[in-house]
Amino acid sequence: MEKNDFQADTRYSIAWQQPDGRVIPATIYVYRVHDPFMIVRVAGADGALRKISYSEVLRIVSAEPASPDRRRTVPAALLDEKTWRERTVMAHYASSPALGK
Image 1: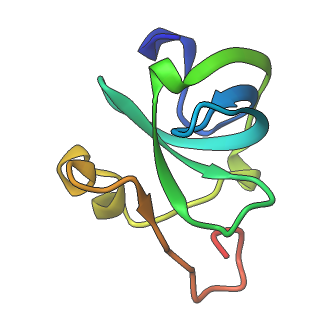
Image 2 (image 1 turned 30 degrees about the vertical axis):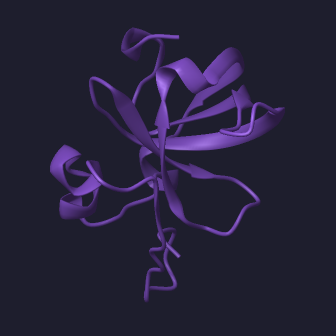
């Protein structure tokens, strides 16, 4: 996959190759798209933000843009490329009862 295959504020169902080589189905919400990777939250997982490289996505099964009233928000500084240079996972929990929680 390439950067052009993904858009921010969109939910995707994908075939994701884990670092150990296993391929699993996953539903992700894409927060931001950078050149070498994207920042996502995996639905039904631990709620952490994750860095996924495009080469880890083997196939896109479906894509659904999030309507403006259903978008999930996190602070912009957490989505910057420089924040993710040395990380692959970041736990972030919103203190608001809104959609970011």
